[in-house]
Image 1 (spheres, rainbow, N blue to C red):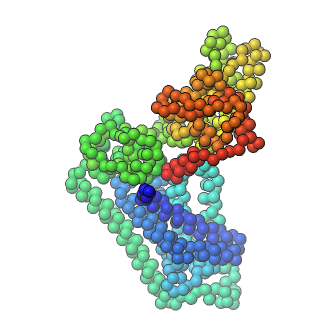
Image 2 (image 1 turned 60 degrees about the vertical axis):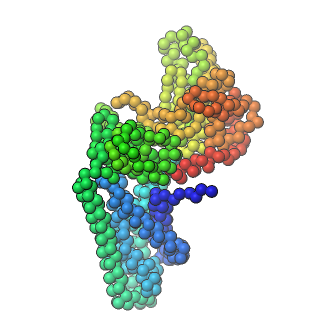
Image 3 (image 1 turned 90 degrees about the vertical axis):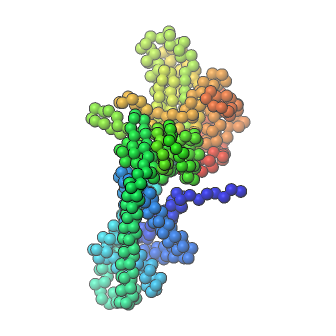
Length: 584
């Protein structure tokens, strides 16, 4: 049995998630203050029970130390700060957190552990109910929360379910800290009003402050020592980076990275290819910020003057996930020790000419989707007997029928070529929903074509038959074209296979041929339904046979997708989809 390898990336992510959970519950505790002081105290008892037991204490402070150490190490490994502003903000927030956090930790957890000082919600708020302390607490809250939310956004922003719920999640990300500050202000104001009664203060508040002047002095000294330690750590980090850079200049250990178009960048050894690109201002995509997760920075090695370092575990997993060939590497992970030439393979943004100046358009995002192709039967022969205006009339009615059916089911009819239409499902949903949407669209297209044919015959035109092919899998979605003539489309084996399946409808004399991947993703049991037959076919462009379902009666699909139709069944694709999402 092979023991799974735990990577630095996974450790950093796990520690960050633990800290984010702590911050989330902490803010929720503050937000309870909007209700009342009593509600906040009850919430704090639950909060302390969760985070002050030995197990959670070990994981919490272990995660804090590990995340901080790995964060400093990640900064040290950077050779340039020419990075997107969002990445720079996240890094700056992460470095500022310890200094902002120390005073609060000192007056709560450390005071409790060393001197038994209780930290009821009322005492904590009262200590912070001063302009300087309150502003520092608000700043700490904002920085910590923003750092965590940015990290999660970079991790999840290209997942289908995240795209669906991003507006709701953004509202939650704004509302929670806002409610926390409102709860803090509400409790502070309530305590300030009550404290005007000296008798009430002596009875309810004074007993909460049990530290002696000597103990407070010790905590102050400890806080100064912590601040000095943080300053030394940051100073040491900056000094280590300066010494490293100076040594590299003295040793003249440089490599030259060559790019398409004749551009070349010379950088010290130790730079990643991505950092070399950024250093020279060469556009180079990196959706995940150089963490080796997204694969969008990948390059093809055109040539190398020496042996390249072998991919690390994180890089190997990402390359394996996308099925990368041997000479493809992640630019954010490759630190060449010899000159090399690279070809960037994914470009997500490119300046495009426009009447109002250059604009940026998305160029390629990997996603698991469903692709539907539909083509008319006998159109070429029949169109010879039509006048040009008749052709326009018939095609536009056909395109309208197909386009409305696709849009009604959540897809995008993105290409209209001759008498064929290509549609994409799943740009903002997970593969399971995408495949069910594509099947529902096929059923709607069948009904729409029946109505269209009836109308065409009534107007003196001949009815048309059609064929549909559907496949599901990973593609690159983006805007393709030249200069201002660009269109949203998709490319990849899934697109080619869907087109080939549409062609197979002629051979099978069927209306619809779909791959087994679509059925597995959609979790629709079509066995035993009349007009549905399994088949194994050879598809041009694929080395192995493809298992498909040949469907002569598309209404069978409509029945299977209805609540009263055959039940959904689990499939191995669900587990594979979840595994891919977790490893991305």
